[in-house]
Image 1 (cartoon, one colour):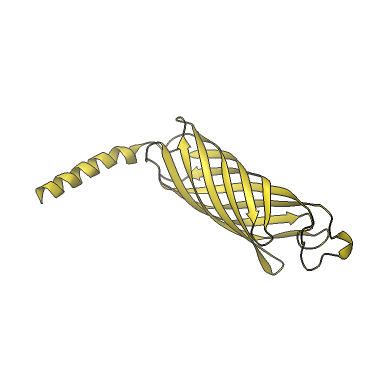
Image 2 (cartoon, rainbow, N blue to C red; image 1 turned 45 degrees about the horizontal axis):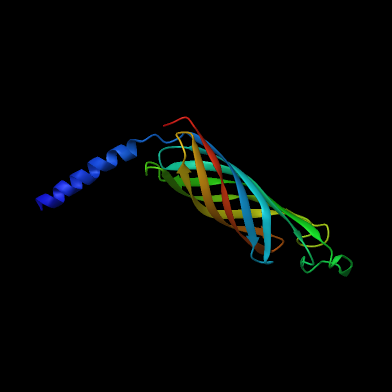
Length: 189
């Protein structure tokens, strides 16, 4: 019993300095993204996202994100309303999102900071995704998680994965996305 109490005290005394480590008040991330539209089997290799996070305390924050992705689709199916005159043409497909929501972060784990988030907002689809010349804007939600690898006190490298659902014109568009980029931290709590 004494050994268990001593081990517990040692564990808790070692955890206190980890929890006392500074966490940023605010961070900004710029990332490259690769997205896959699972409904159409289409890759969007030219993606990006910019995110800003305000940290409320050591574990909770609020994140806003603007992101986009584009691809050229050759002979792609563009939905039930596409006319025969435009089938077989190359299309430049684009997705633009504006989202925000809560983030839970585990600061104080040494050189890594894992996080999980749930974003809600809008998505704008263009380039004939639904029918010729269509521009659709719909509700989107996006659960995701990632890890920041600290390169110094202010700079980190991020790896992140998301799964986005966009609700437009009566159906869902499902998209998975992988991001990598740089994070800059401002201030400390």
